[in-house]
Image 1 (cartoon, rainbow, N blue to C red):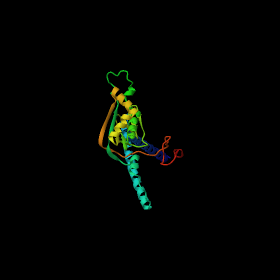
Image 2 (image 1 turned 180 degrees about the vertical axis):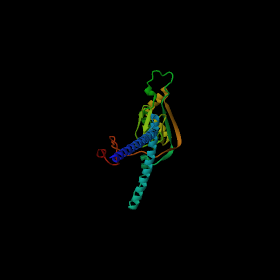
Image 3 (image 1 turned 120 degrees about the vertical axis):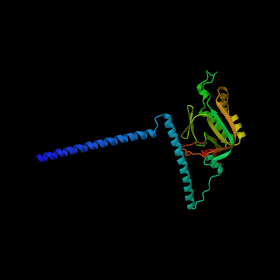
Image 4 (image 1 turned 90 degrees about the horizontal axis):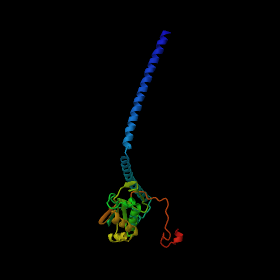
Length: 260
């Protein structure tokens, strides 16, 4: 009986020690994992908003580069598949490829720069602060005038502008294709510089901005360029829906009523 009692106590002691060791190791493991997770989270997501914004912008740049590389691979594979199948695919005309933004463009043109007015100007106590900043409609007016002046290609903040491009001004920052920009804003257009200047001068909306620029100090600068270099468009081109303005011919020889 004593032997059995001795073995029972021994098993109890060994069991207690084992449980203690397991609990100690588990605690150490949980502490290490928590420390690693905390450090990793701090590295992946900065605590300050500015750092987080920069990290996300860098991520957008990286993903944009991956999209460009994948698009090039798709084009190569599609071309190889067509050749293997014996299909003769006629590439679009150069002007269509320029308009779609898939080709980079170089040539003479204009650079138009718009900037906010200094907020601490003397002699403007009664001016609405809203007048002192560049608005979305100001950029749209400039770009529409340049298109009307025969611009062959255009960029906004060095990003190519195509028919599906969309941008928004929130406060005094510009959001364009996942990127955020602050003034000054630069619009570059390839085309005949003289015609582009005439189109800017003929635009009533641009004239209104220039009047405010002369009154409250908004930035306005137009420079002739001998050799602009605009990059290819790097965003997506899919449309969810689109409407043709009334009276716009869709296909040559097709009645407008049938086209719509």
